[in-house]
Length: 38
Image 1 (cartoon, rainbow, N blue to C red):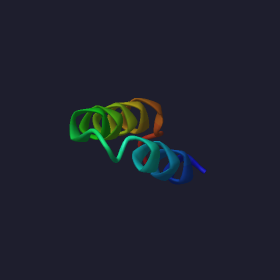
Image 2 (cartoon, rainbow, N blue to C red; image 1 turned 30 degrees about the vertical axis):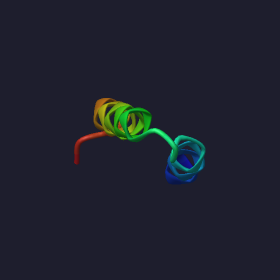
Image 3 (cartoon, rainbow, N blue to C red; image 1 turned 135 degrees about the horizontal axis):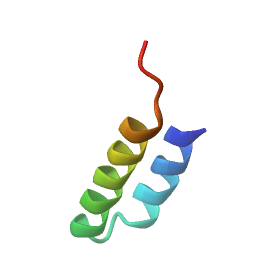
Image 4 (spheres, rainbow, N blue to C red; image 1 turned 60 degrees about the horizontal axis):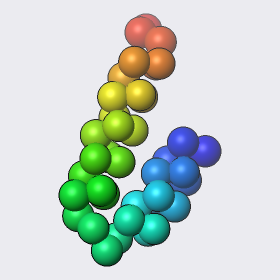
């Protein structure tokens, strides 16, 4: 579900590489902050 949201956002931001880059960084930050360590 989270990857799907990233893909939808990246498709909508495809005109602007700066926004796409920011979206990817925010996704990775959120993923790393919310995942549970094993």
